[in-house]
Length: 280
Image (tube, rainbow, N blue to C red; front, side, top):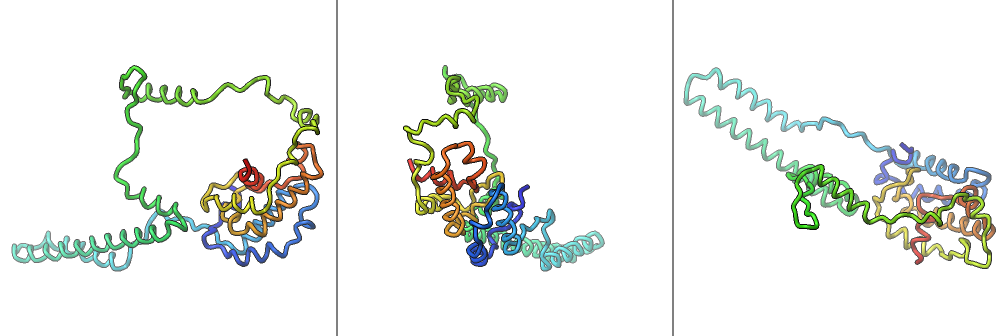
């Protein structure tokens, strides 16, 4: 698992992170090969100092002290019932047990209501928390219902349903054209017709990048490098804008697309994708 995936970015000190990123001379730091690796190492170094690690969830949930006391009282009273011979005393003890069980039920209901309130309050900040809470108390599981053939017959057999779904999935894809397949990328990108538009003709600016980043969900999945969307959104002015200028500068002097993306461009979790997303 990438190191950047181990941090709890909801507890990050973004002001300090932005200040530390701002004082870095990226032109001096990002020199030589492995620019992307250097960039990630610097981000990891800063996050290690300013972002706490995710807490490992315990499999056993601690029982509140008040609830433990009630449960111990109930246990003692239950043991006492087996020794009682008087019907009057037995009814009295059973009444005490029922009252303790009512108190325990109130504790459980209060705990669930508090958890529900927290999930609702944090729905904008952390929607995953709300959905995990809703799933925890869901009584039904979503399943695939019976399917219908073109002739109207209803299919309930799981094997036949799987075959029908597979056929439907395959039907939406077209066969790739063999004549358009690139067998030698080096030769293909080397023989560029400079009379036609090239990759360097793509025009976008920091404002385009900012608008595209704003469209990202705070909880978008990270790429293979683990670069979290919250870093992009909270540090876009100091990171992505600077990277955009470097990528744009490379495009101005580099026409070999293969060399551009393998040696010069710093591809940081969707910066180039965000730029292309903002333009038709």
